[in-house]
Length: 105
Image 1 (spheres, rainbow, N blue to C red):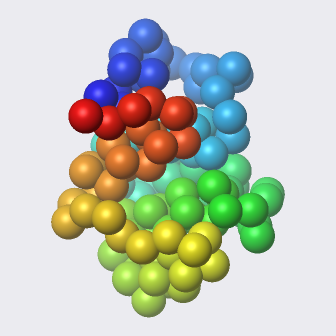
Image 2: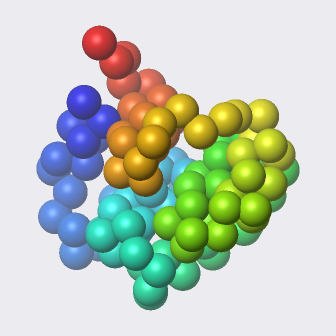
Image 3: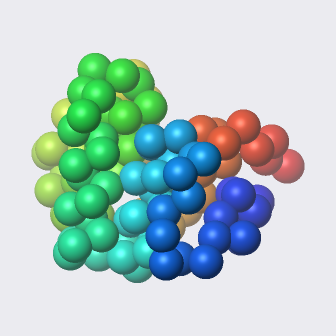
């Protein structure tokens, strides 16, 4: 499961050995999928590499968390991806698994 890559995280400090898109996912999960300081940290990360698929894809999720679906759809389109699930948490799981190379069964 996607959570496996995050299972050893202590949730105090972002793991520096994770890719930047995974770090953004770490922040949004730490913030319990709500807009707040953790969302802002994740958003700052994805904005650094706009135009790169992985960053744009996570950017889409952040705007879904924000309930700004027009903006989320824009970032999904820029990433070349579509929403694959019906909930933010399930989408986070899907993204985390894909971006970390975890095979889904």
